[in-house]
Length: 410
Ligand code: AMP
Ligand code: MG
Image (tube, rainbow, N blue to C red; front, side):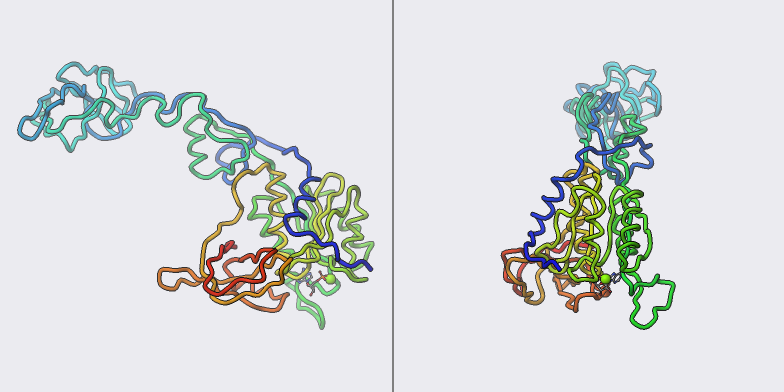
C-alpha cells in the first residue's frame, strides 16, 4: 500500500502534466455557421477593406460639406436634390456644387459628396429643394473605406474562441469557412462495485452513478465530445480492459473513482499499465480532490478522478478543463466566469492545501454575498444548491466573514 505523502500543489501538479502533453493542435475546417465556441486554429488578416466603399451612417442627403458651411435656422442654405442613391448599387448621380442626393443608412456615397446631412437637419421646400439649417463637416455621417478594418490588418488570432460577433466579422470579410481545433473525444469510465445506472433501483449498499453524467456534461460544456463507456466493477482485469478501450476510443480518458490509496482502489495500477510515461501525479494538496491521478499514456492524457462527486467536479475544473483547452490551443479565455462577492461566514482551511468551498450567491442590497454551502463530502446536492466555488489559497489558514472573494461560477 502506497501513501499519498508527496503530494503536489494543484498548479505544480498541472504543470507536470502539461509538460507531457502533445503540443500539436489537431484542426479541421468548418463553415462559420458551425463555428460558435470553436477555437480558431489560424491567424486571420483582412483580405480587403471593410467597408469596401464609403457608406452613409444616416438617412439623409449626400452633400459637399462646403455647401453647408454657415447654414443656420436664421440663414439656411438651399440645395437642389438631383437624385437618390439606391441601396445595393453604385449611385448614378454625381453631387455637384449646390446639389444633394437622397441616401439611406448604409447606402454608397455618390461621387462628389463628402458628407451626409441628417434628414432631421433639413426641411423639404419642394421635391427638388431642401433647406439646410446646420452645417456638416467633411466625413460627417460617413464610414470611410477600411474604417471598420483595413486590408491586411489582423482580425482574429489563433487560439481565440469564436463568439457570435466574431462569426459576423468573419462573414463580413468573406471567410465562409475557418480552421478550428478539432473537438476532443473524452472517454469516461465510472468504476465501483456499488454503482448502478440511474434508471435502476439501487439494492442495499448500492448507489446510482452520478459522475458519468456530470463529467459528460462538463466535457460538453467545454465544447468537446463525451463518450460514456459505462460502469465497471472494482476488478483489475475489467477495469484495465475498460481503460484500454477508453484510451483507444478517446483523445482523453477519464476514470472516475478508485483513485484513493487502499487495496480496493485499482485505478492507479490500471493507469500505470496503459503505457508510457504513465502516472505522473498521484495526490494533490487539495480539498476536495486529494487522491487525483494525472497521467499520460501513448500521447494521451488520462485522469483518475476521485469518486466523490464534489471532488470529481472540482478536479475536472482544475485539471481536465485546462488540459482540453491546452490541447485545443485555446488562449486567454478562462472557461468559467468569475464574480466578486462578500463572504457570509468564516471558512476554515489548513495551510498547505487549496480548499474549494461551494457557495450560493445572495444579493443583499447593492452587494452580492457568497454564502458557503457546507456539507459532508459526497453530497451531490451541495453542488446542486451552489452557484459557484471559492478558493482558499494554499498559504491561507482560512477566509473571514465580510472578506471580498472571487466566486468561480458553475
Ligand atoms: P472512490 O474514489 O472509489 O474511493 O470513491 C469515493 C466515494 O465516491 C465513494 O463513496 C463512492 O461510492 C463514491 N462514488 C464513486 N463513484 C461514483 C459515481 N460514479 N457516482 C457517485 N458516487 C460515486
Ligand atoms: Mg470505489
